[in-house]
Image (cartoon, rainbow, N blue to C red; front, top):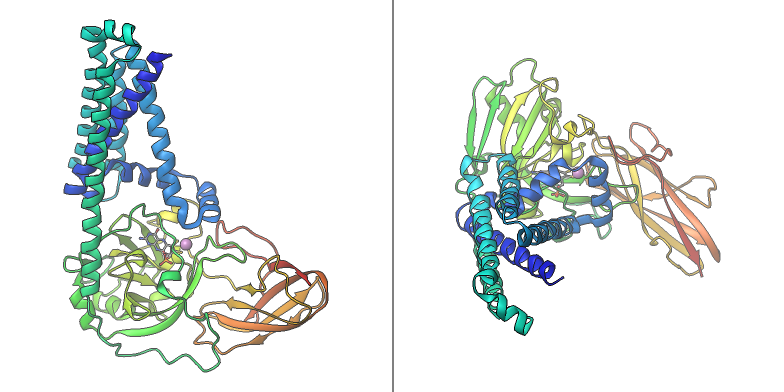
Length: 501
Ligand SMILES: Nc1nc2c(c(=O)[nH]1)N[C@H]1C(S)=C(S)[C@@H](COP(=O)(O)O)O[C@H]1N2
Ligand SMILES: [Mo]
């Protein structure tokens, strides 16, 4: 029993010290080589789509802390097993630590834009953990066994492990400080960016738009696979446009900002959004129209896909047609009057009205490659999602809340409906499965933004269900058939239950 406990503690302390040292080294030299972040990224990429969907649905923005916690628990388990085995057989030390080091190193190498040197933090950390395990385990046999028998506690071992744990704590705190400094620097360089006024500004929102039409940056949903938010130095950022083009282009942020900018209200939503879900928002975006850049590069005949790549290795495939058919597809630099927030793609992201984010809105973009859909499957397409992610016509009830208890009398039922690129023609509400009745549409900015609606409901006491459906301006009615988001977006009516008091 005592041996097991000793093995567990030494194993965890040794692994903790090794990981802390590796994290400190990575934080100081190369954040992308952080073993924890690399393993987390590799796990995200390897996770089956159904589990990812579950995580997005159930955990929302907490999915990343939860993932890191799971990784920490698994690591602690492996470290304990190594420590316990080591008390019985010495060979477990090199085997166990080499295995842990190999996991970190392999994950680091699997990251996009990895270099061979990225294995160094993991390997050094593993070597340190091995040395630490070797050291206290040798002690009791050499000198301390009698004292263990007499006192029941090996004081020297306890002291050493405590010192090591404290050292690991200090190293981890230092690693966090270093990466915190980096974040501060990224935040400062973002604040230093001065966005020029738009050459083609957004038309003011029409009178009669209700509160909540524009989503503030701090409330805008965030969906991405980035375990840590990429920190890009805007002075060093470059965008390369290459592939099936006549002339490759390379642009700096200053180059982009010198071009005539457009400003537009556009609604962005996630294909993973469930019926009634929160992954949708409308912002005023400032950016460079992509069409002009593509004209300059000269897209070759046959190229039908733009593959956007980001610093952290996401790939998003967008049809060339959606960049040149007159819609406001842009390289966005501003969001609601500010430079893009770091979480939303600073310094530059793509935005394609009418396409779900995974198909048209690459954040932290650094590269646009002109190619074909035959030749390349982007990240989510490889995982089974539809190659062309056109937004489906949909609608949501925002008030009353599900299971709300409004008072009897006239209850205002209200929400949003969206069909970017087509626009909303009508919204209808059905009470208790009865006939569809027209809701009032509020003014909206354009066919690329959601439309707010409201419906005056003469509510009688008791339980009721409320359902909503939208019709887009092509006349297509939102389908009633329930479908989950995979592979091309959820369908079905948002239906809620309320009890009228
Ligand atoms: N680099 C990068 N860009 C990305 C993603 C990502 O994981 N990485 N996710 C996409 C998805 S699925 C969506 S819905 C939108 C979300 O943009 P937001 O987080 O700014 O709301 O970003 C898109 N762009
Ligand atoms: Mo998404």
